[in-house]
Image (cartoon, rainbow, N blue to C red):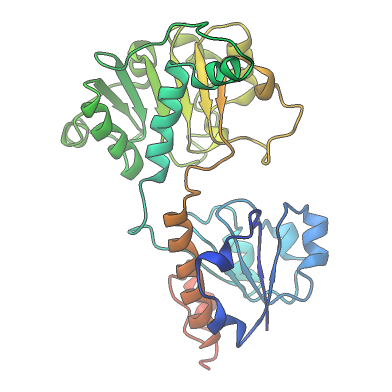
Amino acid sequence: MKLAILDDYLDVARRLVDWSAVERRCEVVVVHRKLSDDELAVELADVDIVCTLRERTAFPASLLARLPQLKYIAVTGMRYDCVDVAAATERGVVVSNSEVTRGGGGVSELAWGLVIAALRHMAHDDAVMRRGGWQTRMGTTLRGKTLGILGLGRIGGRMAVYAQAFEMNVLAWSPNLTPERAAVAGAQAVSLDELLQKSDVVTVHLPLAERTRNLIGTRELALMQPDAVLVNTARAAIVNEVALIDALRHRRIGVAGLDVFEVEPLPADHPFRSMDNTVLSPHMGYFTREMLTVYYEDAVQAVLCFLDGQPIRVVNPAVAARMPVA
């Protein structure tokens, strides 16, 4: 068997976790860069098992059809929407995901980093200081301001708890949020429009689905306060990128703190890179030593179980049921 660890840009997978038990049973190759579908079709032509890193590489039906040797995809992360599971099932490819009960907290911590960096102009002032300059802008304090959280799940709930430590008012919205659930997290449930109108900081923590794709567009951005901060550490497509660029260019909102992008890695000539009212991070919300260790430990366990004919955390069990037990 041959296994490929994909998109390990910094070569950390085998430094964080012991893969020796897998290497005794598989030839293991590591891919350190982003590959196009055509490159993947060549690179993975003789690969039986793939270990992804979150959603860095997608496996649509068109790519799966070009990988006749593929038998198993171990997705690192709870969500597996980067894989066309129906197409994988049709082709007899088992797909599994990772646990999320260990190592969490990184995304919410980074989101707060982006909030503070945006309100205190940290990236701008750091650049000024390195050029020999000094103070150029006033900052804004968090105490007494209003935080609007889109999505009050596991990560959004942490954001609400942290906001209380900053003595902020907390508003929340999601498609199915009830006032009772919001109150438990220390937030007030409001409509989407009210949240956008009243919040000094809006932070996005929703999953990407058809009803959340382009949830924040031109109309919604126009509802926000002209000096408001928008932070997105969830999925880029929840906020319409064209509308956001336009709002930032025309100063309809204050600052955007972004960790996720429509195209990743972000192209060198992308408008976000040249704007003075963006704070950017390279999709690193989950990218901590602790979280990556959890993901790759889960991947090693999952691969070994698959090799034993008893795959775990399977998201398409109908295929797994047809596997012969080793």
